[in-house]
Image (tube, rainbow, N blue to C red; front, top):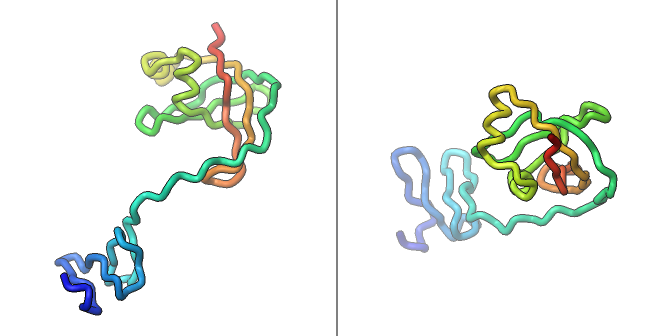
Amino acid sequence: MSMQNSQPQQDSFGMGQYDSSMGYEQGMEYDSLYGQGFNQIPREKKKPIILDESKDRYLGRLKFFDENKKYGFIVMDDDGSDIFVHFDDLIKAGINKELLRTARMGNLIRLSFGCMAYIGKYNRSRKAIDIQLLA
């Protein structure tokens, strides 16, 4: 495709390729129906801003874990609220996928953990850290 062409080439679905005259970044496709770029090249992930890493310990049980997305939630005993937990933190505690699968079958997984408050992808959030499996 010539970069001098002011209209992007279109395929049978109304989608075109990148055209520098449209003002979009290289690596984006152009949707001629809506006039918007999409499918951007992945940007560098923004690091979360840590607000507080409490030394306090909390108790709770694993409520949900998505094996494909590698995250889940713990229900805190204190107030019944949910707290985010990532698979990497569970692995550090010696909790493997097989044990997590038993939770879907009704096995209660009790945990002790610290809490980190941060500003991340979806604004202010909390994450379980320094996790320990309780017997």
